[in-house]
Amino acid sequence: MSHIWDGGHFAKDALRAKDGRKIEVIYQGQWNDDSGADFRNAEIKIDGQIRKGDVEVHVRSSHWRVHHHDVDPRYNNTILHVTMWDDGISLLTRKQNGQCIPTLILYDYLDSSIGKLWKTIEEGEEEPSPCRRKAETMMPEAIGEVLDRAGMDRFLHRARAFEERLEAGEGLMPSRIDQSLYEGIMEALGYSKNKEQFLELARRVPLEILTGQPPEKVQAAFFGVAGLLPSQGGKRAKFDEETEEYLSKIEMLWKSFLPQFRDGRMSGEQWEFFRIRPENFPTKRIAGMSYILSNCGGMSLLAMFLPTFVAAKHASPLQRSRKLRDMLMPRASGYWTRHYSFGGKGHKEKPFLIGRNRAADIVVNVVLPAALAHARQSQDEELQQAVMEVYAGHPELQDNKITRYVAGQIFGDGKERSSVINSAMRQQGLIYLYKCFCDVRNCRDCPLNA
Image 1 (cartoon, rainbow, N blue to C red):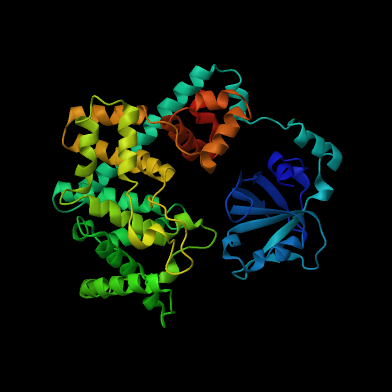
Image 2: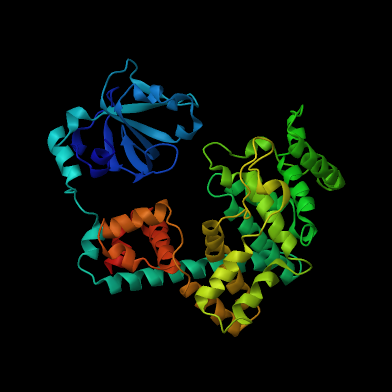
């Protein structure tokens, strides 16, 4: 069903929803491999009114309720329910927020038999994307050059965003760049589901009161302001001896911060734990950040990274990028080496609170742009060159849904894919193309079509 919808294997000019409304598909949307509806950013005209949002695809119309989407707020952005067959009673699909959306029964509008469509999908004979058609006429080196330029554009754009925050901020330049870098790292630790929450926490708990403090004191400030301490949720449950001992210490340290943050606390309900791997729980990430800040000692956050760029010029860009990554993988001790959250059965000891892939991602997306912004502001050409060298030579990061999507659009399952996308800069180029062209469906101006 998803392939049929994505490939547009239906008569687009005659579509009618189950309740009789005319449906025009302007854009089917993009595959979503995360939680929520199957396709994101779709554009559908319903009875002459253009709507943008998600599309959920099922085999039978009753599956909306069978899969409990009617009580799941993550489906509230859905604008159309598409099914192959109708086995329901209601004409409308109801969402958790009480709104109803039309249901499109696709079986009567297919442009071929199900058997033929199945064969087309299995044999990979679907119409290639415009990117794929263009890429087939280009040498791999030429595609790589396009991605390099796009990756550099994205990098410079991110550095410029740091510069703008510095220009708009108040106070001394070193403290402004440090706070911006701190906020960027915190935001990155939140992934997609806790990104905004981590950024808010960083803004509520300024860096200047945390740098160089012992890890547990930093944790107390973070957990207390975040509203994540068990005592902040009403009557506190009884935990195991190890957790009780840890919490007693953190609660005592939190009391010293109370006068400062009495009216500046978040709610524990703001934080997402559902469908998140335990290693990525906000509690675990907060603990990880506490060790990074503690490791700064008396120096600024940026100053901790800068020697790696210039003082270690004899090292290769790869060696320098690995050293930067390792600074974001602090070794932990005590409670958080065995726990993902408060209480529960302790797991096998793990020395690192932030994994290698996440640390490398933060280097590319946060540390390097911030360092370049600082170098430009201070007119330090040597540092600028060193940062550029590390960025250009940084190895591949872990793939994400955007890089997979755009790479699939360009290469399909072609062998050139792994040989061309062989650096972080080229992956950043894929993201740049997605955000500037794929996401707004502007294929005409895409650099691949130049």
